[in-house]
Image 1 (cartoon, rainbow, N blue to C red):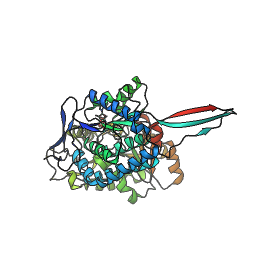
Image 2: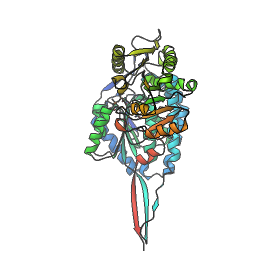
Image 3: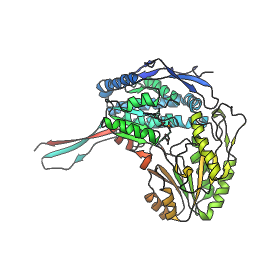
Image 4: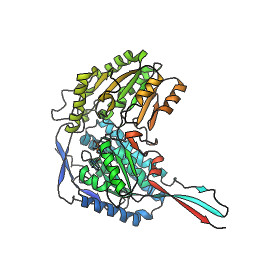
Length: 486
Ligand code: NAD
């Protein structure tokens, strides 16, 4: 069975300069449904020559109709695109769910979040202003925010729609022209959005999509001499390669990488309110979330109770096909299942299993299902408490006091998000200040938070910020103009 019927685009084509074309090499990459193992479509395997064509088309857009538009006109196009995404949200969600194995209800949220990004950045396009700066007598100094020019966007497979929205939405709002390389495991929604962008009136070349593998299309794009900014979301290893490639051309890079984010639960927590989030903040997208709260640090006085209550939740978690809207769908690929399974096997050797979910009998054999596991009493230095697993695995770690909690929380290479659970206001503030992360949630957890909230990491979680207004500064460069008028 293929998903071709009812689609408004051809998944096997690249989108370059406002038109659709086959990849230069003529090869395609099969698209697998992770719930069933079936091949449901094929995408084009782009080449370095396709990247050249896309970058040239983006530059032509900047030199032509797109570059000539006012910020208000750009904003209107993004708002129209948001409307089209909302109209087609159900189809987009079904497509994403079939492509990456996400339960339909979660894919629907992603489609609405995509629309929100285009709305938010559409509305903000004409609200970014420069400054005037007091300077010498007889001078006026002002600053202008200008687009970088051609921006490259390399994104992963876990939240394809949301990451496209936050990255491309902000870049377009600032007047850049974008070349996007979606993940080879998750390209369908990006192509669907490109087709909607045409309907919304986006000028040719302002957005280009080149599908294909990271080592050829991604590498060619991030090292392209005519790209002026690179935005990357993905693993630390690839991020490092992208930064090196961009350094050759001395262009700025935003890196949104991995995480090992902690929930820090003090003994005055409202456990009833916290419990669903303690588990849910890791289980969404079957744990394949950069900001998954994969470590749960619990103060010793309530540790046994939290362990028991979380184990109960785990024992009730059900895993099954994405269309069934179970707690968890499959992982994205056989490769990801193998990586996560190795971690779980390692945990079973060294650690205590406190709770474990169930794979439902209707989950097809060929799907990439992994039952979620909660490990207890995990030493903070254990690999399962240090390394990003990117699957449905959480570790419970006891702590004694505030200083102990901060030391353990800050004791990994990562620093993306942290959740702090306490009713003590002064402690909330102290923790928020002392945690080495990009976002802190107090008595809630937003796995990256809303569209409006700047997001990004410290340490190996990356640098630069996307989302919120902050992204608009990242996708622009500042020019200072000093006028001597006497
Ligand atoms: P990945 O690094 O393997 O791939 C990400 C993208 O990079 C894909 O499009 C891939 O094709 C491309 N790529 C691969 N090799 C490349 C190369 N040599 N040059 C250029 N591009 C290349 O990551 P993944 O496995 O797809 O995603 C999982 C990782 O992404 C996890 O570590 C996760 O934490 C991270 N992630 C981070 C965020 C965030 O916002 N911080 C969000 C989602 C995922």
